[in-house]
Amino acid sequence: MTAQPAPRLTRLLEALLGAGTDLDPRAVLRRLVDGAAELTGAGGAALVVTDPRDGGLAGIRTPGPEPAPGTAPLLRVPVHVRDEEIGELRLTGRPGAGPFTVGDEQLLRVLATQAGISIGNARLYETARQRERWIEGAAAVTTALLTEEGTDDALTTVAERARLLADASAGVILHPTAEGGMEIVTASTPDDPDGMVGATIEPGSPVLEQLLGGEPVFIDDSATDPRMTTHVRHRFGPSMMLPLQASGRLIGTLALPRRRGGRPYTDVERLLATQFASQAALALVLAAARRGRERLAVYEDRDRIARDLHDLVVQRLFATGMMLESTRRRPGAREVDDILGRAVDELRSTVQDVRTTILALQQPPAEPPTGLRGRVLRETAAAAARLGAAPSTHFRGAVDTRVPDRVGDRLLTALRDALAGASARPGVSRVEVTVETPATSPEGREGVRLRVAADGEGGERGGTTVTWWAPL
Image 1 (cartoon, one colour):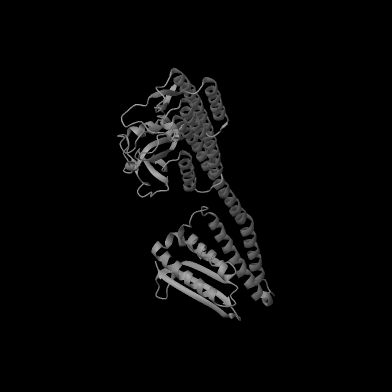
Image 2 (cartoon, rainbow, N blue to C red):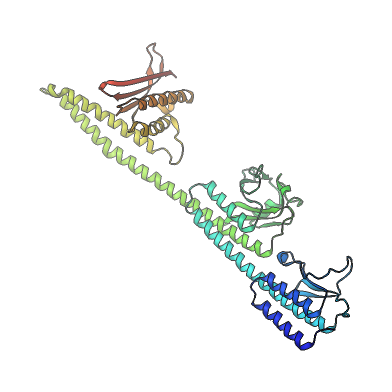
């Protein structure tokens, strides 16, 4: 016998009320499925969702007996979300209670309608959460890009954050190549990235034509899609390839492949990822512009310092030296001749140091020194911590243009050894390094000479001088 109408209506209302107050969509659907079996006396009930977007809600059923293999359930009604059929609510037979009635079917339709509403609400909630995550992710990427220094770090930041937001197997950045193709330059993946960086899309690929035209490309299965030509495509399934475009200029492509057999991307995920790529592209351009402005400011500041040193300090030192030199030549100045001589030598040394500093300021910032002069200055600067003070460094002659690299490498080795020896001796307070070319050997051959002079305990007597010479 079926339940009496009034008690069954009461239990139906209780089931609907319980479904309306629970925030967990799976718990709501579980209530509805259990209620369908209880209110109809069915041997079992099941909610089967066929839409892949609701994969987490599929397969909800009561502990009741399953229908025999190959047989259809005795009663089923479709479940709709708005006008879209996304599955069905099924009932199996009720032993000894007779067939299902029209009233049973109407009750099941009410429950199916509520199930559709619950699934629709779950979709809206998940969509809102996804939008929130992608918006927060895009904001975090923008903040990171505008504070990081290196271009490689910026690309890795975009790839890593996009991979996590999209629940992808990899986050990949591709750059256009000179030949007209695209090459993977950054890959973020928890799996083995072997062979990914450097993989290319050849010119003329249909995928490439879409990307160069500013259109995103959505792929159901990378391993089998004929448009995919990279040698790593067999690793992946569903994928999105999104142009990184700013001010009408394509600066690269963001690819977000999932594993083979992975869940396809939904329309909402595709839209949010496309919007993320647009904002990330703009952030990359702004970050590059900021780094360019900062680099320009450094150059301008260095130019100003070098100009001030040359126009003010060097000229004043030179004028003072000329004045002292003329004083030495005046009658009656012999008693101070030695003092004036040392003062002139010190001024000349200071002028040479300032000129060396001016040349060092011309070295591009954040890049390794180029030329023998810059490499020598780097070595002496590195030795300052061990010596307690930076060595005084002088250059005589066109050392950058006259000394070949092979000789310069040997000179730097000799310099390191001499500086290490000076730092190991006690009482060293001053080290003077001189690189001179052309420097003539006793046999009359032209070469380059390195001289490293260090004072020590006992003044001049405790000092040491290392001299190294090599032919050009």
